[in-house]
Image (cartoon, rainbow, N blue to C red; front, side, top):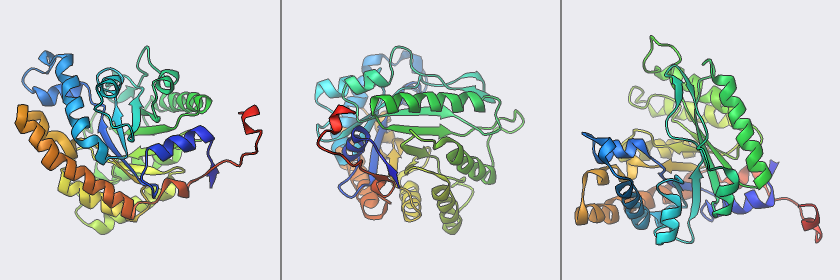
Length: 322
């Protein structure tokens, strides 16, 4: 068991249930949210509409989660200052710029210019999230590994937990989508390589193609292998799964060692096509119960983050060397 610093230990407490499960409501979407709000003309979605949507979702659903993930541009500060973010709910802020640069088969991730770990700490974030596009055999793999190391070191310096979200892709121009077997290999090898000291929680993709693989015994094998590979707690991303399928995935993942979820569209995606009272009613009567059920499921089944991290031993003069 690793010893966690005081600041990180306290922040992870803020992001979890009393039993140590993590259930994050993810709403740091930027360009892809514009696409969802107006598929015909996403570039015509004004910033104010993006912000208002996030405030509505967080206000209705946020208190059912243990933490909310928001971006600094269109969500984090606005949800704090409007009162949409409940005071007892943890706050994760994204630190990466949306999208990627470079070739689609050699993707490069980058930090959001003008933001960073110190500003996240100053604004009251409980943790930061770094999304990277990663494949162990991609030409940019070493650069992505260096970015993760750099960000982890900064988080250590500011005593702020780092949630790392690696997204897989095909580095082969002839292969558009990774087959299920390769997804499993890549997700698990990524966990081995990127859960370095300073990466406190891994936000992991489901370690196979759940649309192609219907056997839940295979799901369990892959999730168990992922748990063995990760040196830190991992939470399951919802990605493109619908809500009912995601419930099944979460059940299997938590039974095999996952610490919880980071769920976005599986909870709230239908709200993007609704307006006015219809949207508010959906968020209250459908999205919120979905999040409540997921949080309860994680609380009942997930491996607590405290199984990985021990609190530091402190003496009365601890603050002199902190």
